Image (cartoon, rainbow, N blue to C red; front, side, top):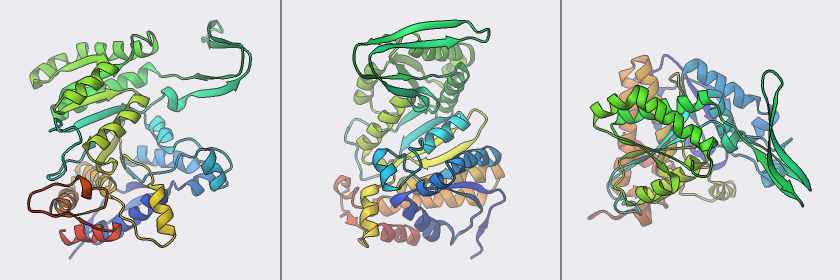
Length: 399
């Protein structure tokens, strides 16, 4: 069988721990037998990031700008324990945060639905897509420990004039943090959300806490309202969908009561937390797609979960693991489909669609990883737990 050829490379960002192992198996078992895979490779494993003093992360982001489509494996964001474990030079920042800042994109996360797995919230019949602003806020914040004294927020304008606000008068030890966002990034976020909602023909809900954050969060609210009124109100009416702004606590209650079928736009931290909540409620964190979309049409696909550390420690002891690779497979298929679309390579697009179907067919026919077995209920089908590699081989049989 002649392999499908690619004309433009994908940017491939390798990662850490168990997902790094799955990454290689997915390529070997599911992609390389069928596709003459063309990638520009960057090793974002923690050791290599440390060796390059995180330059490799910035290089991968620049390559993504050049080629337009990237696929990323899950990576470790080190904490103090990881610094000691890997003997790191310093506590490097989140590679996802670095890449998102470089691309100024919005992250869209959607559940992978299939016959046989019912969400923990049974009213959810349709997907809930989390649109996460991927720039700034706590992810680009600066913070410090302080003692007794006064903490101030100081802004110096281009003419040297200072504006000061007292953050807190500390009588004892504490912590202080400063964070930011930019109008340019918020406008890009708003337009990305409105465009995505129009593309998928789903209503868009946006939430912040502007009653408490009367300047910071209110700026997000105002920009969304301005962009909607001036650029999207007529388009939404024509498409028969709505835009709604409400407080985040209100939208959480609405989401839980809903049947799904909505794009929920969140600020950076809210989207980080809520995407995990939504993914888990649909069944598994490993059943969630994630794509970063920049304002100028650059795409970075990844799984919406971590590196599966516990399974990796079992793997390096020589034990078998039943680690769910579905979100990582869909990161590859999303990138291959987009690359095929941009290059007008119909064969590559169709292959990616076939791989997604084969993956879902495998589960719906009763073969799956251990995390899905207790969730799977389908008349006439008894779920069978497979180890990680065996599951990938079962998918391959259906290709």
